[in-house]
Structure formats: structure tokens, C-alpha cells
Image (cartoon, rainbow, N blue to C red; front, top):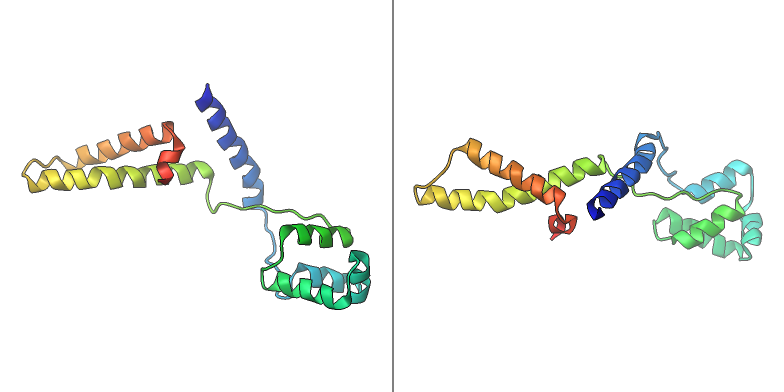
Length: 153
């Protein structure tokens, strides 16, 4: 039953992330979103600083921190609220999570099987490549079905 819930969690997370992966999201403006939105609204840095309860210099520091990718999510959330915006945050996998797991399981299986196959070949006890490939696929399947933590050690 535990594996069913684990697989369900994977499917739900993967499904939710698929929307983000397919979204045609623009890249962050060179001066950052805070500056871009503030400028687009015609809002001065003094006005936004006042909404945040800080000085103009403090706001310019925040805009620089965003540009330098040094701003915290908590601070970015506060600025978003002051700009009447919503902060959305996600790590977007480059491929579906299921594919990542399959690739990792196969990689780990190869790392485990190939050295043994090589040693066997050196001792003139080698097996056909088809047999080695089948062993890799079987081990990869067992790794996917077992504890996923084994894949990342």
C-alpha cells in the first residue's frame, strides 16, 4: 500500500509540474521583475518603498538583490504583495519525473552490472551483451519498484 501512495504522489507532482513545463513563461527581465513591473505601472521607487515601509535606497537595494539573484523568497513575496502581484514559485524539471526516475534507475543498474560483466569477461566467463542488457533492465526495474532513495546514494 505504501508503494501505491508513493506512486500516486509522483503522478500528482508530475502532473502539477507539467503545466509549468508547458507554459511559455518569459525569462526574467534583465533589471528584474520588481523594476519591470514598477516601471510598467509608472510607479516611482519612492512610492513602492513607501508601500513597503522602507526608504528609496532600501528599495533600490532590493531591486539589485533580485537582479543579482540574491533576494529571498520572503522578501520577494512582500514586494509582490505591495505591487498587488502574486508570487508563483516552482522548480520545473526538464523532463517528466517518471522519465528522470527511469533514467536514474538504468544508470545505477549499469554502474552495478557492468563492472561485474567486465570482471567476468576478464576471467573468460563473459556473457553475451544481450544477457547483460537484460540484467541491467531487470535491475533497473527492481530499483524503480524499490526504495527510490537507493537511486540517489
